[in-house]
Length: 279
Image 1 (tube, rainbow, N blue to C red):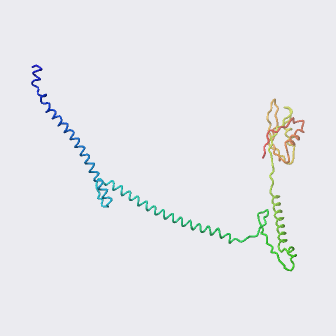
Image 2: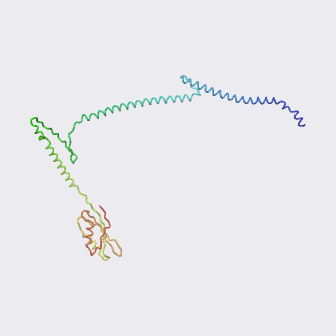
Image 3: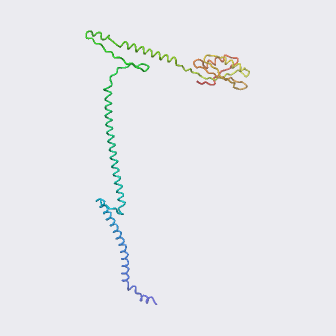
C-alpha cells in the first residue's frame, strides 16, 4: 500500500473538530475540579470565621457554650481573669501597707517634734565648771551679791564664797600634782642595753691567749657584763680572741672598752668591734 492510499483511508483529519471538542471538554473538567477544591477551601474558611464570630458574640453576651473550636480561647480567657483578680488583691494589700507606713511615719514625726521641744524647756541652766588635770571638774558656786540701799560702796568688798572656793581649788590642784609626781617617780625607767662582740688580736702566734683573755676580762665597770668567748684562727698559726659582752648604753661605750683593752700592750695588738646590737 502506498502512502497515498494510506492517507486516503485516514479519517482523523476529517474528524478534527470532534477531537478539538473532546480536548476542550477534558481541560474544562480539569479546571473545574481545581476550582471546586478552591471553592470548598474558601467555604470552610468562611464557616470557621462565622463560627468564631458566633462564639465571640456568645462570650460577650455571657451565654457562651463550650465548643471544641473555642476551648483554648476560653481557657486563656479564664486564666487572664484569674490573674487580673490576683493582681487586684495584691494591689489592695499594698495600698493597706502603704497606709500603715504613712500612719507610723506621722506618729514618729510627732514624737520627734515633742522630744526636740522638751529638752530645751526642761533643762535648767547649769553653773560653769572648772576643769582640772585629772579630768574632774568642780562647779563654781554662784555668788549672790547682797545689795544695800544705804551703803552701795560695800557691795564690791562683799564675797560670800569666792575666797573659799579659790583656796579649795588651789589645794586640790596641788594635791593632784603631788600624786602625779609620786606615780611618775615609782614608775621603773627603761634601761637601754647593747650586745657587743669584740675581736681582740694578739701580736703573733707565741702570745699566751689564756693570759690575753684574763687581761680582757679584768676590765670591769658599772654596767659591763662579759659573756662567752672563743679563739678564731686568722692565719699562719695566729688566733684572735672573740669575746661577747653586754653593756648599758648610758654607762659603757665601745671607745672606753677599746681604750681599756689596748692598755695591755704586751698581749693586745688591736681591738675591733665585730658586731653591735641593741637589746
